[in-house]
Length: 277
Image (tube, rainbow, N blue to C red; front, side):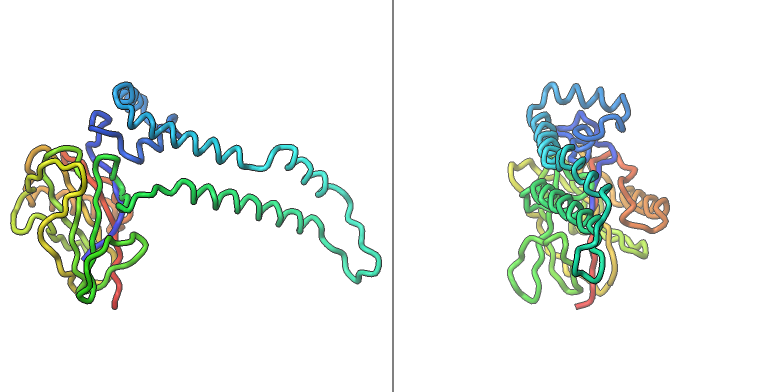
């Protein structure tokens, strides 16, 4: 079973670092953030150089992108050409529509600028960035297929029945971890811990922690929501199952629309597709 995306339910700015979605909002659309949260973020940024530098980097990339756009004089010259009357060339049986050619040229330039900007802003981190994943909290998936060694799963690739998967997490500090899933039909499954009926304690490590236990995927075909629940206290499976089922009902079964869970914890959500072999 499986699927990909992520965002914290109670991910307040007082946590170790701000989530990626919040850093991007502060850099580009701070006006869309509630004033109370902006104040909390400001207090955090006054004490956290890492988050402040991350916002500055996002603003710098945006500035470079804007600078890369065609100048106003260039745009004006295009408009002057468009407004000029079109004269047919002597010896040519049909008129050449210069306006169409110029417009297509401008669109091509703009498309190239946007394409290179998107390439530049891709974060060179092999860990899949899901909804809710941040600088200090992330989830990665390792896949073994047909008896081959496990490799990190590429987020644009589907999974298959009988794939063997293992999870790796990066935590902000020691705490309790639970990983569960919910498929398209609303069926719940626990991936970690195995066995256990509540979240398991994990110590802090600077790098990733490969979780024990390998999971062989069943024959289910479709999308599957994976939830990493991280908290400073143990949460039982019944509470987590209830939160996932509630989110499933509220989203009317659209897994990609589930943005958070009603839990006192930080959440990373991922929707991954499973297709036939």
